[in-house]
Length: 131
Image (cartoon, rainbow, N blue to C red; front, top):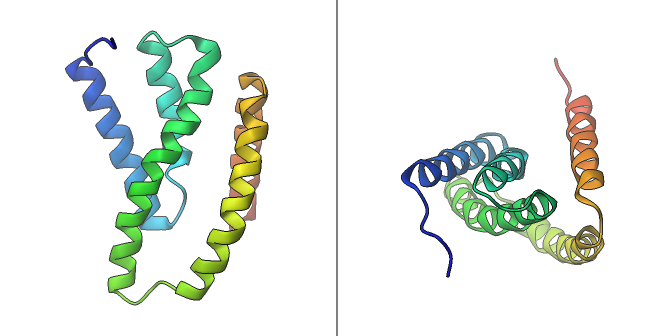
């Protein structure tokens, strides 16, 4: 049986969720930019083995993003800012790509995954036009 969560840990999860959800809803970035590092940190400090924490953070983040994205998409749809045909085709490609990538990620060392995550964040930042 799992140990009960402390109030401090619950508040930390809620804070990470709020930050990830806010960035997702405000800027359209995946909440995983916040969720994954925050959950990795929280899981390790909650006693989850270091060699499992990052993989667990990725999977947990994806599950949380499913619901936060649906909430944000609903709000943007209400304002007329969702291209549903693009959503359909994006979901088809995204489901295939994410299934394949998840199978690959499960077998990788978390040090490599952390490095790849960091590189991806820098690459995304470098693609943003500033003015």
